[in-house]
Amino acid sequence: MSWYNNDEGFAQNNKSNYVRRFWMPNDSDRLITFIDTPVIDLNGIQIQTPFKYNEYQLQLNGHWRNWFTQPFNNEEDVLSEMGYRPSKVAALTVVDHSEWTDKKGITHKDELVLYVVKRSAAIWKQITKLLAREGSLAGKTYRIHRMGDKSPGAGVMLEKHDQNFPLDSSVHVPYNYLEQLQPKTKSELERIFNPEPDPFQQSNTQQGQDPNWGKPNEQNQSWGNSQNQSWGNSQNRVYGTTSTDSIPF
Image 1 (cartoon, rainbow, N blue to C red):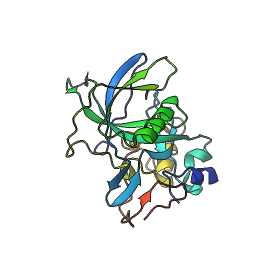
Image 2: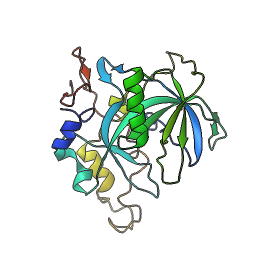
Image 3: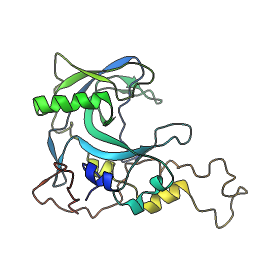
């Protein structure tokens, strides 16, 4: 059984790796181009897209940009034990054609971003209908709209653009979801949410009194860090096509 593309299973129970998530402000629209084909190869493993999994989003350090993939094994699900509830989501890779400038003055445009949408959202229903009708969205450009301050940052509606953005197969490659979205281990989560006190008492503050105690640090905030280097080889099947697929490693 696996932690992705497996609704039945869930019912039963970085900077180097950092990727930017798609987000758009209220009452705006943007052009995006989809990258994923219906089946992609991730290091020899055939995976069906959109890539479906369960995810926690937590407010930490004053913002909501903290995402944690739910592990399949209940014994590893620290956040569930803490009372948090995950959402069913799906991930795709898209080219974001909007232009923006970062704090260093560098202008960005036509860059790959991770597009994650809740599977309860209206736009997810539109995506699934488009996939059922067209078979694939790869290489197709859409205008995405967000309307209303309560609407999701991933947008609420897609509108086909009159031209498709040309893709470069050497550059426009889907993210390796198995690495970027791999669940953190129980010990990693426990270090983030319940760090051990300083055994050498190098600080005058004590555990529970420090206002920053229990908050993830810069290194641990990245949910995309891959820790497992023993992931196995493909067995000539496509994972995610059924809800009972098992991880091939």
